Structure formats: C-alpha cells, structure tokens
Length: 76
Image 1 (cartoon, rainbow, N blue to C red):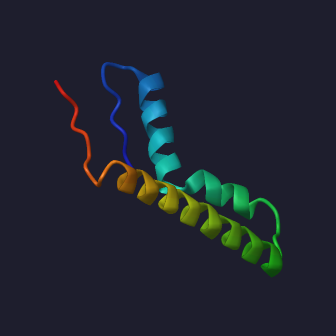
Image 2: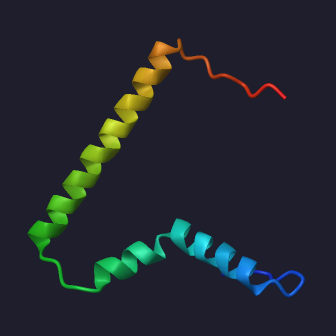
C-alpha cells in the first residue's frame, strides 16, 4: 500500500494512510489477534455481527419501501 506525500505534507499523508488501513480492516484484525479468543466467543461475535447486518439491511429495505423505491438526486 502506497501513499504519496504532496508538498511535504506528511500529516495529510498519514491521515490518508490510516484511512486506507481502516477500510482494509487491519486495525480490527490487530485488535482481534491481541488476545486469545475461544471458538465459542468467536461464534458469539460472528452471530452478533450477522444480526446487526440483518437489522441494517431490514431498516434500509423499509426506507426504500417507504419512499417508493425512488432515490432522491442531489439538486445542484
């Protein structure tokens, strides 16, 4: 992964790098690997994540049904 430093602005390059690593999921993986987790704990976390995902999808689907499936465009 590469980040270009423009005009000697290292702070901005670090922010860009951190954002890319965050999107890549590196920080979450490091946090998970910090301590041992048992199989049952992993299963519980995966199940909770699946439930959260499903709730988000259901809420999104309800909003689409409420607005008739039409997406509003930005008026510029």
